[in-house]
Amino acid sequence: FARQVGNASNIFIMDADGSNQTQLTSGYTTAGRQAFDPQWSPVTGSKQVVFTVADTQSTPTINSNIHTAEMNSGNTAFESGSDVELDGASWNASDGADKIRGEYDPQFSPDGNTVIFVRMTEGGSFTIGTALANNSSTTFTTVIPNTITGGSVFDPAYSPDGNYVSYEPKNNLLSVGPAKIYNVATGTVSSFS
Image (cartoon, rainbow, N blue to C red):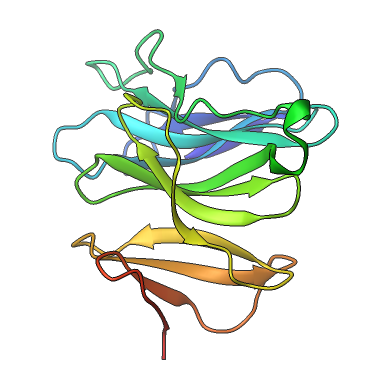
């Protein structure tokens, strides 16, 4: 889970009864630096965690990226040096409207090989795409382009079998219509009814 202390947010772990709370991230202690939205890999025995890191003090705009890290053998901290930016993409002023303004809502695929997440550009384009969870390639692959005029796409999640991705169309962070279902094999989109 994520907990905010002062102006910074970090990732913690605890026992199911709430005891033994331990801080996992340590690099997010300065004002405006936030680590949140953690998810453990669904693969049995995996120690990989994906989460969002945001810098609310960046200039000229908030910038967030998806990170992964590996738990140590005692599940008490992340392995030293394992906290990496997933797809290597970051804000660059020379990119104009295509510069990446933020990445959000990371979710592992059922096999743990990829992470699906939302990417927003400075020009206001929202897409849902994937990157390899092991960071062996920095390629962001668009899965679901934004087709909502003046809106955005959020909250992607795989079905347990990995054949579908659900997501929510929003406008100004408010839902606009039913959630959508993307068929990975056919590329078609339908609505929850």
